[in-house]
Each structure stands twice: as C-alpha cells, then as structure tokens.
Length: 162
Image (cartoon, rainbow, N blue to C red; front, side, top):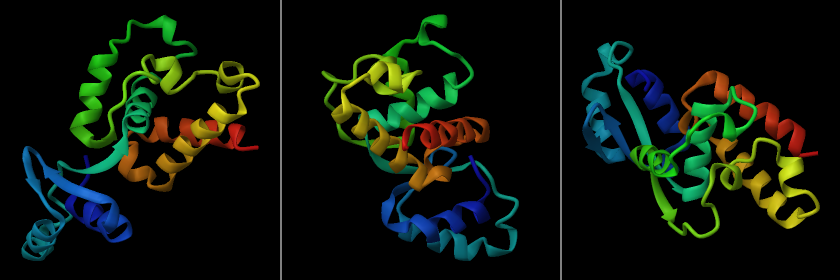
C-alpha cells in the first residue's frame, strides 16, 4: 500500500505497465485515477491505501508473494505452504497472462531457495529464473511491497546474474 502522491509518481514512471489501480476496494483505470488525482492534488500526501494491478506471468506473481512471505527462511520445508493460498494472494495484485500450472507447481520450482543447487547444470531453466527476477526488479516498487524482501531479492539477483 502507498500514498496517493507515491502512486502518482510510480504511475508516471511505469504507466504503460499498469492495468488498474486499487484504492481500498475500488478499482480505477489509469485515466480515471489521473482525473481523481487532479481533484485531490492538495491532500495527495495524506491519502493512502493504494496499490496497482499489473500483468505478470503466474510464476513471477507467485515469486513476489513467496519472496515477501518467506524471504527469512532457508528452506520451504520449514513451513507449511499452501500453493493455492499463494496463488490467491498473487491474483489480488497481478493479472496473470500465463496460467499454466503444470510446470511451476511448488514453491521450490517457482522461486528456489538455493538457485545454483536447484538448477545445477540446467542453464536453460536457470536463465529463465534470472530473467523472471530481473523483470520483477525492473519495477521493484510495483512488484514487491516489503522493503526487506526487496533487498533480499536484489541480493539474490546480484549473486545469480554473474
């Protein structure tokens, strides 16, 4: 969630990638939001509760949720994760443009805790994992709401991109 003035700033930066804007439970398209912002300019730094809905692959959307919820743990086996709950949470923030569930059907296949060990010599799959993380980090404020989780994901990217 963010304040109206922050949302407007991000909208200017990422406009073409935003599907809709949610203020509490009310959904706006970009034009409606900008009109709303014009009318609320004087108090824009006091209105909060805003987040964006963006298009994303199912994997990237769920990767964001997994990162926010479980960045502190070393292994997914430490907790009981219900993938359907992760997917439901992701659907609140993302519009899936790929819904294939066959391939990414566990937290470890979506966002491995130890990517080098998980992918081993499979450079093809590892490359697509790197691209997914890179894409998320191209609009970090839109994809990851937790600042600590975002820093952790940036650290992971620095390690894997070499």
